[in-house]
Image 1 (cartoon, one colour):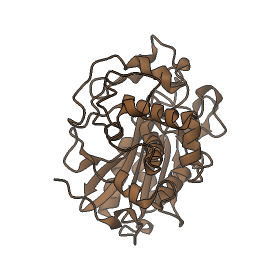
Image 2 (cartoon, one colour; image 1 turned 30 degrees about the vertical axis):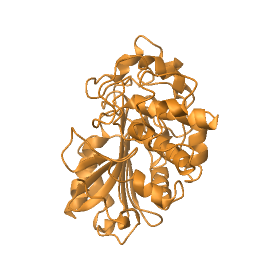
Image 3 (cartoon, rainbow, N blue to C red; image 1 turned 90 degrees about the vertical axis):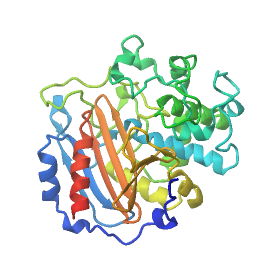
Length: 361
């Protein structure tokens, strides 16, 4: 049986890792060897000096460089926004972890609606069919060859891609990462609030956290200082992800953010500004073992959890064509490491290098 982390886990404490032992030159040396394009931030929770560095180009055709204020797409990294909005509805008593999909979505019938629960959707144990099964498929862009990605603008646009397919596993059997599960959580949010999903996230998560440069932006209407996503790490290859991802993000991913806003999010979340701390403790505590990872990895609700050397961390991770990100927080040390990139499959290796450097400090 998995041991629940001690209560102090989610309260910033005295830093056990002193970031003054790591210089900007040290990070640049680690990152520069990879040809990375994006931004890296090593920061304490709350206030205090941080190490923020930018690399590569935000817009290759115009040779516009990335800066520490550049917005980057998050892909699945913003599933935690969906989880927190659902958590706010649970906190209000409008639904519970054991509420079935059929009990909170009345406008549409699903063949799995009476057996799948909100809690199972939150921790990827629902077993429902997925519109993109990451354990079996690798080419996300292939989804949009027969259906225009610019038409995928609402939660209901995704439902025909999976709602009539057979179950992958019985509900509650084990961890099966599910993008469709978070689409359904977004549908629940819209049914219960009567509002469009993205606006609910703005009201309940993004604005309360002070994330003024974060939002769900359409690919054909990106705001200032936003990185374009590229399919190749070669800066002479200008192919973007405009035909490879939905035109605007939603409940399973696709928001844009900055390293400063990610810091604001973790700080506000762990301070209880989104959910009460008792609910944060529950959402950021292990609920299921991640079966395809080593024993140190578990999943909470919308967040990955790992124990390493007796220290717990929480992570959000995202990857799409032209997008990669990882942000990890060690709450007991009060430390955040964030890597955002506008090139696919780029953030992971940089993140791993820096984690190894941190844990060796």
